[in-house]
Amino acid sequence: MPKETLAELEFLVLLAILRVGDQAYGVPIAEEIRRRAGRSVARAAIYVTLRRLEERGLVSSWFGDPVAERGGKARRNYRVEPAGREMVRATRDAFRSMWEGLDPVLEEV
Image 1 (cartoon, helix red, strand yellow):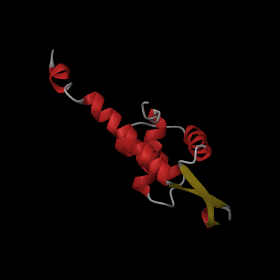
Image 2 (cartoon, rainbow, N blue to C red):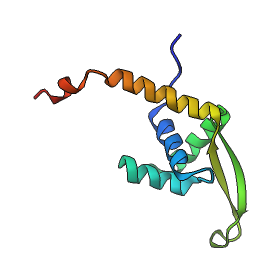
Image 3 (tube, rainbow, N blue to C red):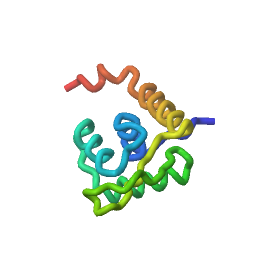
Image 4 (tube, helix red, strand yellow):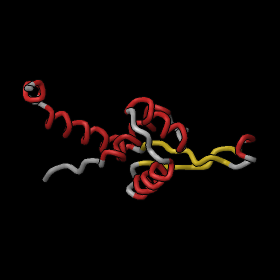
């Protein structure tokens, strides 16, 4: 039975959280994806993806301390759970397997 893998945006969001750290929230997650993947993603799409990942147990969230620049509102922070790390590895492995041997094909003109 094949292992489940992540959709592209799910994969990018999880990778961004891992890079940003355990107190990642929407804005730095979107910025990390833009900076590293060259892809602009609407924050709404990030939050929908985060909610779906949390429902699947791949990330968890909590509210941090209130922040002055947000008018005293707390940010929702995210961390990747062990199941999320396993899905990242499975997705990476699937892409590596699919990529294997394609370099010569991609270099053809």
